[in-house]
Amino acid sequence: MGRSLSGSRVLVLGGSSGIGLATAKSAADAGAKVTIASRSGEKVNTAVAHVGKGATGVPLDTTDDAALEAFFVKNPEWDHIVVSVAAGKSAGLHAMTVAEAYGNMNAKFWTAYKTAKLAKITPEGSLTLVSGFLSQKPNKDALLQGCINAALESLGRGLALTLAPVRVNTVSPGLIDTPIRAAMPADKKKAMLDNAAATLPVRRVGQAEDVADAILMLMTNPFTTGSTLFIDGGGMIA
Ligand SMILES: NC(=O)c1ccc[n+]([C@@H]2O[C@H](COP(=O)([O-])OP(=O)(O)OC[C@H]3O[C@@H](n4cnc5c(N)ncnc54)[C@H](OP(=O)(O)O)[C@@H]3O)[C@@H](O)[C@H]2O)c1
Image 1 (cartoon, rainbow, N blue to C red):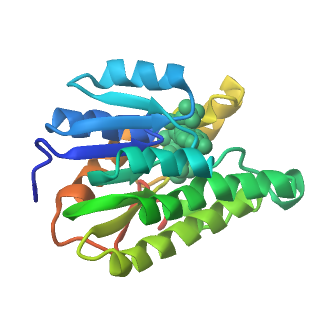
Image 2 (cartoon, helix red, strand yellow):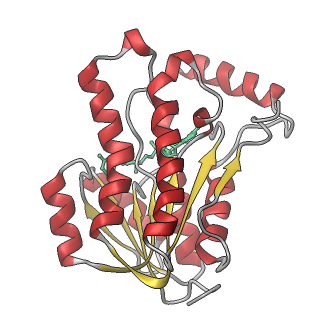
């Protein structure tokens, strides 16, 4: 294994769309045996067909404790796991119910925590979490998202000690153009992405592949653990 993904068993939770899907595709292209999991069977099937190279998929809602546990009882051993599950609606303190807030924390933070507890990752393997730049740059319209991301980055550092020698890292994306904003009106979305592109030092928003490249590096670099890698087009310094 080590620096090569060839023949390694890679699980991507939240792998049917966006960053997870791009990661699944890159890992499969690098020779990994990829498994994609997310809630929608239809999205999983489409993703498996897109990734090809013998990839498999399973419909799985990671907020369902019993289902997640049953999945890892049936499929305990992995070389690399990537958690790219999205949290759900992003909103400010007064625009979200407490139940929605709990749901978001459950989907994104507790999925990572439970996965670390349930999976058996081989000693040379890795766990990669996906957080987000709001951990460092709070936004009043996405208050909780920043908190979840900060918690994930802390979890990643702590797990790097807890699960050692398994390596645990976190990738923290900036604004990435993925289906996560599919529900946004097209003109509003375009204005937001154009504005971000104009202000970022790299003068463009990110693509899922930009983040997938970083995740593959974290999976395969044997001296990297406890890191949070910002893939944000310079958003942190802009
Ligand atoms: N895009 C950005 O600008 C950006 C910026 C910073 C951080 N991030 C973070 O990056 C991660 C990936 O985001 P993305 O942009 O790639 O989003 P995306 O395209 O919406 O993909 C999210 C994935 O999560 C799956 N998912 C959601 N809830 C799930 C659940 N309960 N159980 C299992 N799978 C679930 C979705 O599939 P199903 O619907 O089939 O479940 C989908 O495969 C997220 O954590 C997001 O917060 C994104």
